[in-house]
Image 1: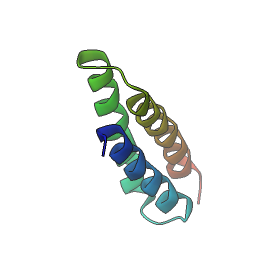
Image 2: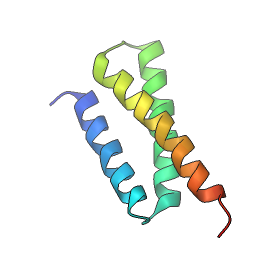
Image 3: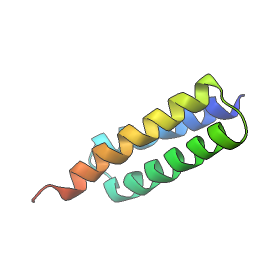
Image 4: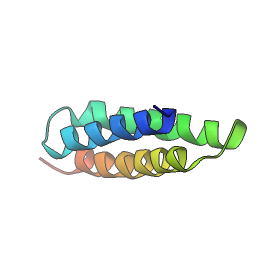
Length: 73
């Protein structure tokens, strides 16, 4: 299994968990770490389609979960 596919599955799981309202803070930091790691690998090592998907998914998740954490309760 390609590294990018594994990363995409992991980010999909974190987004699912975040949408369900469980562990949003954990998903926020996981998305930030995933986006940073994916972009570093893209720019420093190789550029592949699944890595771009993981980087974009991590970035979207980062902003999505950041918005969920910042809203008033």
